[in-house]
Amino acid sequence: MKRIIYIVLSVILVCSLLVFYLPNAVCQPRQGVPPPGEENVLNLYGIDPLTLDPAVSGEMTSHQYITQIFSGLVCLDDNQEPAPDIAEKWQVSDDGRTYTFYLRQDVSFHDGRQVKAEDFKYSWERACDPETGSMTAATYLGDIVGVGEVLSGEREDIGGVRVIGDYTLEVTIDAPKSYFLSKLTYPTAFVVDRAGAESGGKWWRSPNGTGPFKLKQWDKNDLLILERNELYYRELAKVNLVVFQLWGGVPMNMYETDRIDVTSVGISYIEKVTDETGPFYQDLRVVSELSFSYIGFSTTKPPFDDINIRRAFSQAIDKDRLVSLVFKGMVQRADGILPPGMPGYNEELLGLDYDIDRAKELIANSRYGDVSQLPPITITTMGWGGLISRSLEAIVYQWRNNLGVEVKVRQLEPERFLYHLKQEKDEMFYIGWVADYPHPQDFLDVLFHSGTDNNFGEYSNPEVDTLLERAGVEQDSELSLALYQQAEQLLVDDAACLPLWFGQNYILVKPYIKGYNLNPLGFAMLNEVSVKPH
Image 1 (cartoon, rainbow, N blue to C red):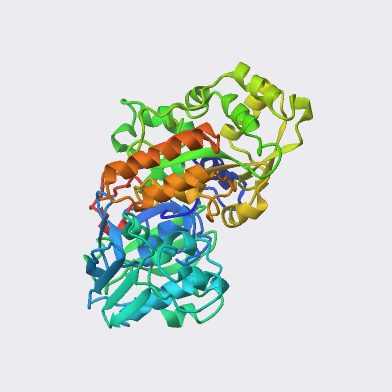
Image 2 (image 1 turned 45 degrees about the vertical axis):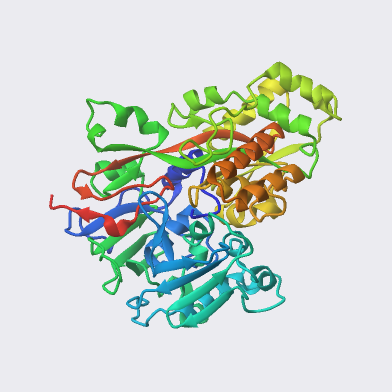
């Protein structure tokens, strides 16, 4: 996400349809948009970010802009491994707990002010300040000694962060952890300008970042334009402008009429773009994504505090039918939590099979004895305008048809869902997760360890916790992955959630666009993109 929650594929597709209901959304030329084909301008479809504050943002929609405007000590390279960014190098102590980062001396904010080690210390302490309201600081900075005390309001400075000099930062964590550097690639760890952040209000509407692009213009529900940062400390962006047409129409139609240069492909168009004789096949790219969609259970509430009920609801869903009929094969069935391509992915994992008879037997063996004795059940989902995704409709239908259980659906607008789910959730919730970094800790520990911020279902199992904690500090990578696999199998056996499918991205890219490379985390770094004359 480099983000807390990603918008489930089926929900994205539903939300894309909402352009039909927005006024003036029908493929109208927009004031301020460069004409199609203008040299060095990349045209994309977009929706408004919920925030551009790196300390607060926790979802992909905002991150796709934040990662272009801001940056941090380290980034992920093409192999999704931690690589130098503002820190040109670092040293790790023999005990694996202390990192000494040496910053580049040619880095400045967009306004020209030089970035120093003190700026990182300020940025991280601001992120952990309870008044900032970050829901990501504990997850991505919590390994640093002293962060917990700042989060709880006991002190204002992070004891484990020391400024050694203008360009040297020392960071001490509570135990050696192989994924710590990867966590620093998440926006929460990005550097922000103190003067801007303390100017009050929605300061991030005019952000002073360090990334390859500056925010040139943002007209809500209309237009967002990024401009090349001429002071960028690495290779300058190849395009002058990136123009996001916010809610600009139906993306596929916009692509067909050359109003945008790249588009994701929805289910409605999959046959059209995969037709080898058609006009779009040569533009098509299919990119595996390290993500999974799932149904979360509120494990502290009836009836899902009963493992029999969780397992019954899990075994009443025909995932193969969902994948083939609802998604037309665009996703892959998930029996576990770790997606293919993730270190620790277990091909031998034993999932909960589709078995209606067994599901009914589990309900009979539960403390309820019969579906007629179950309390009312509601599932929380995200969206606008009351439109429910086809996938969720199909899931609710299967519970009704296979178990005789009526599940109500309650829809929340995205900001409430994404940032207040733990408080807002009903008995179940429909959600997805995409990797922030390719490590099993980012799925298993972040989502299911007792007490973590992203454990929305409040699942707790001391045996799982112990395995995850051992895996996190184990220095032998093979043994660490084996421990994560044991924890994943326990989570599946315990029906901690109902895994549904692993994601893939289908996108169309115009032939004159070069360097648009969507990574397994669902992002493209736009400074690498060039627009050839056409």
